[in-house]
Length: 483
Image (cartoon, rainbow, N blue to C red; front, side, top):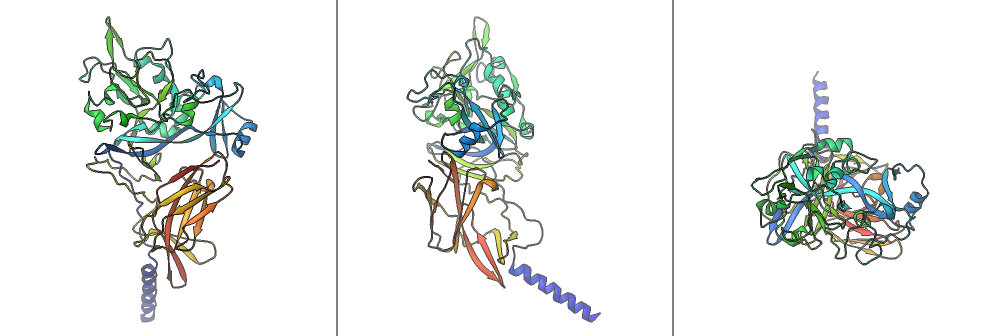
């Protein structure tokens, strides 16, 4: 009996020693790092919005000359002018599909070329700005994702308006926005909202609708009329400026300054006892007001910048996307949300770090093939979050990536991908094994594709005969188009 107890004690001490030397093995459940979304932050004249990835929509054009374009041009099986190839979804359009192509080829307008040519656009994750955080997220598209003009016989009342029908349509055949942009699970996470369409801010006249997706109301954009505009970050013209996606450009929106006009719901009014509620425009310079922009009868296509309310607890269908600021700064990220238990209002400058998916106080570990090298996913206490100094063209289909040196690091890991979310099949990894080796030339990239780059440092240490590689947090993401 005494020998058995001694042996049990020896085993216990051995296990305790292993857990001490290799904390990445750990006991108990690891808690993933979470991100708490915040309301817009105002710092002087600059507003910063937290962002999330949610849904997907045609955005990136696939240009001739790339293998991806060749595959699309020769593909069969198109249905309703959409197709999936190797897990990616695409839409094809012709000049006649645009809302307006009369200005094709002119400065500031998309060039369609031949009427018979197909143009191909890849579905990409949509980025949304958080206008209000909390248990129910109020989101607005970061960019104009589409462009629409107003029909000559369109309704003057929002409840019957063509834009409302388009945004809430579940028809794939008609390319309805709700149907095309969101899966069934994602649609279930969108909260149907009682949308008030008022004559004045105090609601003297109201034509409410129940919408899942809609446009911002005029008073929500005009800082002179409503504090809500200020709370959402619309302090002036500069804060209303919006850029279009490549797909929105193709649909006919003017983008000569780099930005575009975009529609909002127009404030209601009465004319001879008849109620009117159409749509109202913000121009490419961000100008908006009761006597500025366009009224409901504007015929030129303008950008579609939807808004919606999302159940924050449905955190498996959206992820953190970093921040954007009114001064043009964009810090992209992609991280799991964890459980949202209500947001908080910002009271100062936002400084949200990239959240490492899977980081925990109890490091987890995986064993890489056959080299006795155990890689810890935990964050080393000595390692700082490094920066990518530059991603520069270095020849045909070639870029040079340079990271900022961390004197405490043993080396660096660089990942590049054609996927914003760094999906495994589309992501490649490079290891720089020396502290002073801070750059890498990457060759044979695909022409006409947008690449995403991120990097992190690592520290090597030994525990018995095992090499442990501890990583720092991922850097902010940088992007580069390859030609």
